[in-house]
Amino acid sequence: MGRHVVGRVSEVPPGGRRIVDAAGRSIGVFNVKGTFYALRNSCPHQAAPLCLGAIKGMTLPSRPGEYHWGREGEILRCPWHGWEFDITTGRSIFNPHKTRVKAYEVTVESDQAQDEEPDESVETFDVTVEDGFIILHT
Image 1: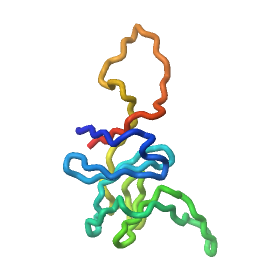
Image 2: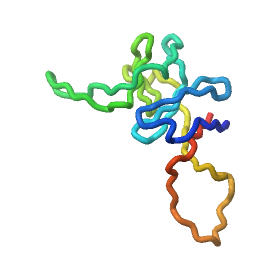
Image 3: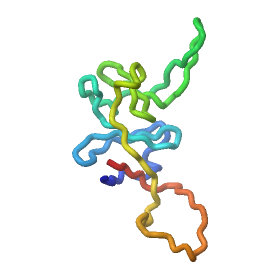
Image 4: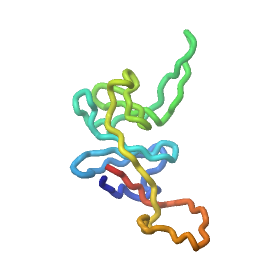
């Protein structure tokens, strides 16, 4: 599995995205409310640059005559033909069991080495990463 540094967390704010080339593939990395997701930048319909599409919400199930809007910032609309995909899973909105786009794992890591095994004789403390690196795993 490859590791690709996308950038710092502060460079992709909530609602933002960055498109990167990783191992010869164009991949969009999205910040959805502070959590990072990555999708292949190719719509399964006609290979449009999917990750350049609008980031929206969608209407939610409701009673007849009622319209409830939700999931703002979680739905990606293809710029060519309007097909919609869930950024958090890569599944299409219209047929989630059959149509999807490849999703990739994304982690946030500090700039310190992650490969070292912790010394269990040393007292440790919980740490949060304020401005770590976004790492794409392909």
